[in-house]
Amino acid sequence: MEGAHAFQVYLRLRPPHVPQASPALEDPFLTVLPPSPTASDEDIEHGVKTQVTIHPPSHHRSQKIETFSFTEVLDESYGQADVFAKTVAPILTGVLKDGRDGMLATLGVTGSGKTHTILGSRQQRGMAQMSLDVMFRSLGDKITLLSEAQIAQCNDAEADILDCPAFMNKVTAVVEPHHIPKPNSAPTKPSVASHAVTCTSSSSTKYAILMSIYEVYNDKIFDLLAPSNAARRKALLFKSTRSSGDRKVVTGLRKVMVKDLYEGLQVLGVGQYQRSHGETGSNDKSSRSHCFISLELKKLKRSRLDHSSTSIKEATFTIVDLAGSERARNAKTAGDRLAEGGHINKSLMFLGQCLEISTQSTVGADGKHGGKIPYRQSKLTELLFTNSYNPATEPQIASIIVTADPAGDFNATSQMLKYSALAKSSVNPRPPMQVLNGSRNVSATSQISQISQGSGISGSTAIAMTSDDGVSNNGRPESAMAQDAAANMIAVLQQQLKQAEGRRLEMERKLAEANQRCLQIEREVREEVTGDMELQMQLMQRKMLNKLEEGVEREEEHLDRKLDMLKRTLLESNDENDRARDVEIEQYVRELEAENYALRTEVQSLKRKRVNGDSPLKERSLNRLKF
Ligand SMILES: Nc1ncnc2c1ncn2[C@@H]1O[C@H](COP(=O)(O)OP(=O)(O)OP(=O)(O)O)[C@@H](O)[C@H]1O
Image (cartoon, rainbow, N blue to C red; front, top):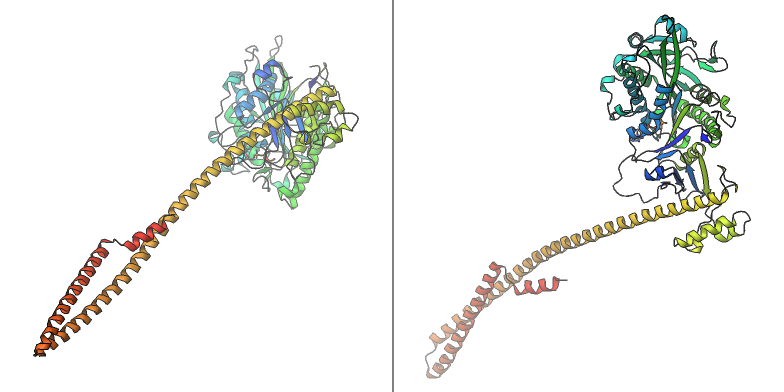
């Protein structure tokens, strides 16, 4: 246990809200770093990633690149079953086999996936349902209900302990049954059969499972299994009891004894229905309270000497779905919702302080925590650090899943990462000269500028690194931190290069598409223009032919009239002198008739051509159009 952190802190990244057709043009602010070169061989072999960096959007006033370390980073590819295997399965083994208390909590900005992780969706179940499944699978027919005497023996918190059918009767007297989610319609996937634990206890050992669900709303504790009118809800007391000594417990809770998964899901459904929800600008079904689901395991061992007496050993697994921190501007809340938001943010700020102390100092070999945790500031921290998870008393197993949306609110997410990460470091982009003049980080700076030059980054754009206070915050020598930060920076730059390459390819694809479209449009315009021109030409041609025909007809009439006149003159003339002139005139008449015949033939040929659609004029115009 020496040097171990009090909590395992996992960072879970949620997938994008809607699948993106093309990569976003704005860089995502969060980047998962490849497995650290200083990680164990096993972690490297399994590709375990533990660090992320965040770089502020270009318009942000600070351009500090920060690196955060976690127990493990569960990226967007991790489904509910993978998350269960990593975070919950080891805790449940401790609870079921060794009788140790355990806690799992989700923490994150509103809408980042806390409730999805704990309670799942219509398609996939969450950590709560899977935990119940594993518990019932592991204990099988060793599950029993507590007798009156046993209830009296272990009930020091004035709890209202009852079995599931009696509980459901009480609930349905107050709540319309169709409002409560039905276990039959709950998803059965993913399967967790492989995580069942083999308990090697004697056949006479039995187990009872008691469920209680409560919420911390506006710094008060309310029982979610005791439905009542919202106005008449009575806050529960959190106090020490006869047998709990200094340790405070929530008193007067309703606790339901469940004997199988169906009953467990029924109880969970009632709690889910009763929990305070509201619509905010950031999430249309936002949890407005911190919800505690407590699964108490009572191990009942009959005494060998006195069969009537039973020893009861208890272990509790608490699942906590915290409300999300939110910025009033983004949440667009007012009135009650705004006040709720204020309470949520205040309690999370206190939790942040406690976490910062507990994650960044370590627990010793005795399991005791090094730093003093200021948990008395709010009900939430008091419940979390004295009741659900108590690092001061005995080694326990606790995991926190920090959920984050890499495309979400930068400020809120970076704040969340700051107080939940196990370690952090930062890099300040500054001109190299400025830092080289500084006193403390000269060696670190020169190392990084060397690396920067090696990676092809020019001197003027090379990023120099300095830690905020010049002292490593996880006790490592500064030069090692500098090397880590330099390696991180290179990884970030490589990642950015990869993204830039992706964007270049995408732009090229879009350019090719645009060119193709241009060609298509040009073809369509050509066809349209050619069609119009043809129509215009046919009209012009028709007009010209009409004019020509009219001219020919006029000419014909004129010639006919002239011929008639000449013929008449010829018939009326008798003398000799006139005869010679008559021959001349006859000759002229024949010539005129031949000319008339030629003109008629031409008109006929033009008419034929018009019918066939051929036109020398049209041909000429079409040739001019070919551009
Ligand atoms: N890992 C994930 N995979 C698929 N969907 C997710 C994931 N995480 C979150 N979502 C979806 O995003 C939405 C918001 O998630 P959820 O309600 O769990 O957020 P939250 O952190 O609990 O928010 P709040 O603090 O406001 O209650 C839901 O519709 C949920 O199904």
